[in-house]
Length: 244
Image (cartoon, rainbow, N blue to C red):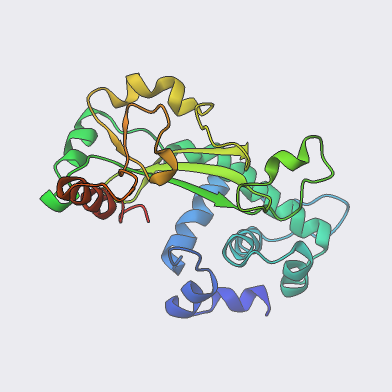
């Protein structure tokens, strides 16, 4: 498919091609394009190859994130060299990382209070999510590559994200090897007292038994839970629907 045709797609078709978790529609694409250009994204390219238009770079990046195709597959689809495809995706990703703090930021006092005023069935103030994802290449040949094998016996790194009541990410920490279970190396952990004050996070079962006094976790069902325990686990689960 020629990349110019992507720009002529209607909203629903465009969103279907660039959908991962949430659909990206044309208006959001135009907004992202403007932000990336302000952040320094340009059409200049190296290796004396024809420059890639800025919209094409953004489309290639979005396609890579939404579909997890290889650089070769994307280069074929977008009629670009493999090295050019890699360079374009890396350039967009670098700028995205630089402007990320404009969108992923810890809430201020009044924002915390607003988020804590949830309906009764979402009584906890915040939601927390711990997930795993598989890298594109196996790190087995690297130093301590086996550390990336998680408890399910495949290579991964850990991603920890915190969202507010609207599902907006307010903190992200990524990178520890999949074998690691303790996320006390995150920057959030070193600053939690200042950030949390009198509030708490909701955590999933991965945090049961870990020393995180600011995270409310469900109780492990060992067959001896009371009705109150089951109700609390149910409440936590409903509150975490936002982040799921």
